[in-house]
Amino acid sequence: MATDLFIISNIKVSKEDVLAEKDEYINKLKALNLDSVLPRSEHIEDWECEFPEIYDEQTNSVIPNKETKEIIHFSSPFSYSITVYPNCLEISTIYKYRFIYTLSESEFFNKFRQDIYNIISIFGGSEVIYLADNGCDILSAHLELKVWEGVSYNVVKKDIEKSGIPLTSDYDSLKLDTLSYRNITEIVYDDFADFS
Image (cartoon, rainbow, N blue to C red; front, side, top):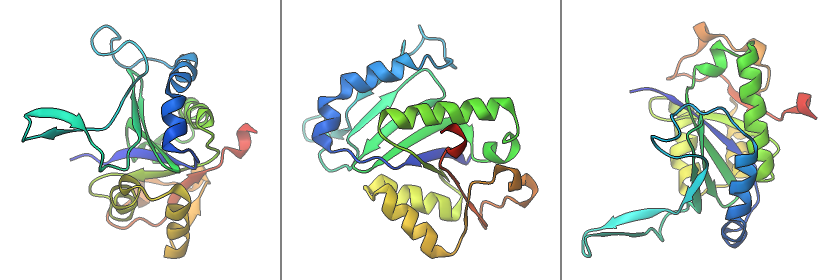
């Protein structure tokens, strides 16, 4: 089991606005011209959107999932996919959580940050918190038990601040040899101040 990197951002959108503007979001995402990591002809050509669905055993068909907090999902052949919740944007990546600890001084990481900044800006976001999935105690709890259940970015951030675990945006202080998925000592936050 790997511990994948997820990113959440502070957006404020209604379901109605997202659905009404989905084509505009797709056009803006396409305009980013991100580098593809999958052969475009093999899966999908560019950004696409899909709505949450669930298998219904009674009808033996896939139907809209009306119980989920997810509004819409944008998939792509790039390093990222996006899920929109009310008041929270989730970006899943092809990277492992340790990526922010090992490559933070590289030009590649700066391009990664620029991509993230450009994506969240499309949806009105201005900051992010890096989280992880399975096997990463505190980070996965915030992702799986809060974000995926529709808790807003601002509430998640306040809960993190109350927990006493510091939010850090100092990438230089992140050391891989001190990273323990069972004992997270800092939560990484980025307000992209250097991009303003």
